[in-house]
Amino acid sequence: MSPAQKQKPAKSDLARMKGMLVIISGPSGSGKGTVVKQLNPVNGYALSISVTTRKPREGEQNGRDYFFTSEEDFHKLRHENALLEHAVYVGNYYGTPRKYVEEQIEKGKVVVLEIEVYGALQVKDKFPSAILIFLMPPSLPELARRLKNRGTEDAVTIEARLKKALEEIPLVDRYNYLVINDIIPDAVAKIDAIVAAERMRPVRSAAAIECFIGSGTGV
Ligand code: 5GP
Image (cartoon, rainbow, N blue to C red; front, side, top):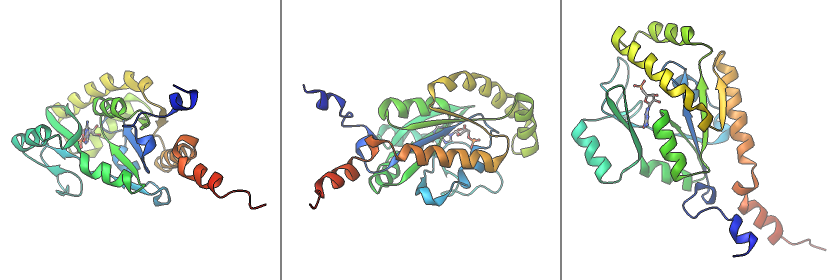
């Protein structure tokens, strides 16, 4: 095998596809949802909508926030291989619909998955070129305060989510980037900057390089 062949990314890797896969994780209450909604459209983001067996919170809409489903239907999707990854989080199932992600990547979009750590690591195993960003709250008391102020969960669930945060935070070293979410617009700008820089990696620009070389010198 020649050195050039050795450097080629694996066939399954998204590096060979047109778009990019960006995963944003972080403890419940770290502000992932708020940050993701404010990402700059100039980067061509496509936000994946997950399937969950969790009950909708007040104001959440089926098909906008999540595809809310029964456990039976969730497992059906799993068995049909319709989910790119899935995980259990504080008693509920969550999963990423595969079809949307693949279609958007093929269109050249920057597909954003806002998912917890075990799902993120499953995706990274399948697609090593996926970019993993961990969004961290400034402190544990601040995280507890945000969860309480959100008012969407009861005390037992808040406790379970804080416990889960302590389980998730040590896995941050498996991520490519850590962004502290203290001031929301700053965190948004940092994620936009990461994505813009990742776009310029030569491995993601094979078509541009080929086009440059193919155009000849004209002299
Ligand atoms: P929540 O119930 O607060 O909406 O979400 C709970 C956790 O599940 C969050 O950390 C969220 O990022 C994560 N999550 C949402 N969708 C998915 C998914 O499709 N897969 C995985 N693995 N986690 C998800």
